[in-house]
Length: 185
Image 1 (tube, rainbow, N blue to C red):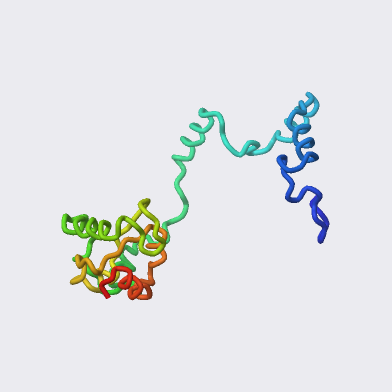
Image 2 (cartoon, rainbow, N blue to C red):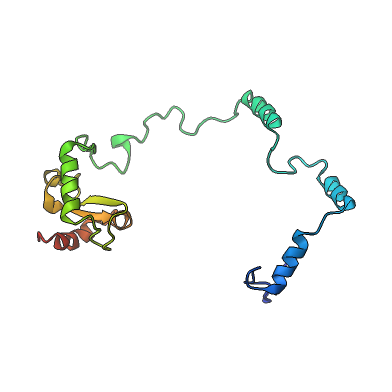
């Protein structure tokens, strides 16, 4: 039984490190040997239970169960069986027209642009000033919308992973701020 409604349990917030009383009770219970009657009582309570340990320690039993389950066919179909491509590409309501040209590959031109951005910003996140760690070169204006600015140095800024994630779906909200950081605006 738990504490009555509105009452705080005596040991709330107490740990073995902070309370002598909790430490004594914990040590007493931990070191207490179980009698033969106690062990028999536990065994009796577990007999007839399907999974008394909730896991299988014996690899032979696990293998038998696995082999038996392999032969069983699932009696349900996949929900989208036969609907191949039913919401792919232009059939998807979120389709934005697509741009097969823009598939990011680490071309020498991109690597050069990225390295130049990092060097210009001294390998430091321009939002939180974190040096090193996981840095990303971020396009201020999205390449999918402005492919002509893809390798322009003024269109890049160094961000750490955390700050880069903040900009997701908010690119244009941060655009003026980033252009001010780069000093090209």
